[in-house]
Image (cartoon, rainbow, N blue to C red; front, side, top):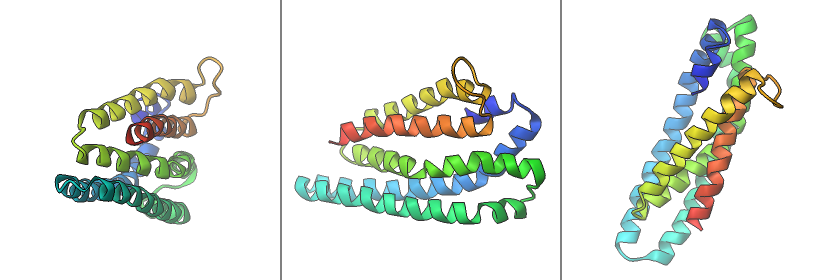
Length: 183
């Protein structure tokens, strides 16, 4: 969704998104891997009928996921400029990459909670709610992207930063829904 709207700014803006994709893919894949582990372990414990143990494990899984997300976020922020320079970003392009990635990276803990929460829900047999949560996240992003990227209505024109902020808003909005479902 971000790329669609950002590409309407210029080819250079779209190219900046291309630099971010591999790094964001590594972060998201790491979180997905953790989520698969959470689902597997919790489904096993729930299958044994140990609901109290499963609740404790779910809480620990969320805490561990958040700690790992903060570590991923810190590494990403500390290495962002040299990594993107090694990938070939320079000048204005590097600035655009950093504009997006800096804000996007600050939202990683929200994404981590959201993904861990969805994994817990799936482990408990609820596959519909996590799918709906992710659909709502996409719709929120779709709504906020044009508003924040282009500065429509009362919103300021933020370009790359707006795309990243729209993504974080979608994660935070659905994180609250996920938290409500978990509790």
